[in-house]
Length: 165
Image (cartoon, rainbow, N blue to C red):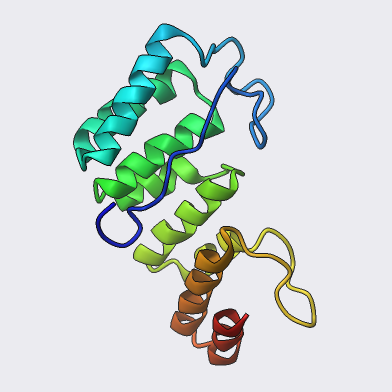
């Protein structure tokens, strides 16, 4: 898709909300992801994103999140807000979401909002080992973003490590 950050693909979700990896227990109990409404709303959401109809994507994501309040749907809603340039709203919806995609998007939101420490925390799932980085969400893109964050924090040597890794 067009522009930086707009190539983020939606998470593939099937079955019941709450049964996928990273979902909170009972967060979407009873929400059938294969119901006709959810399927149609999901298709409309994906169509909207692929055709740069950001406000329409927000509309369908809000319906999906209301129907199935789980981490996957919250991520889709935040992604729609992010594309619609509602960065603070996207950031708010991502708090506590443990999906790797959501954590990377949260870091992107924090970067845009100049919340450097929070962006760094979102990208790093665990403590930093003495020899370097343990793991960064979203691979090379996550490392690049972490390098940018550390540059903004004035940590030039750590930023260089992110870029060369």
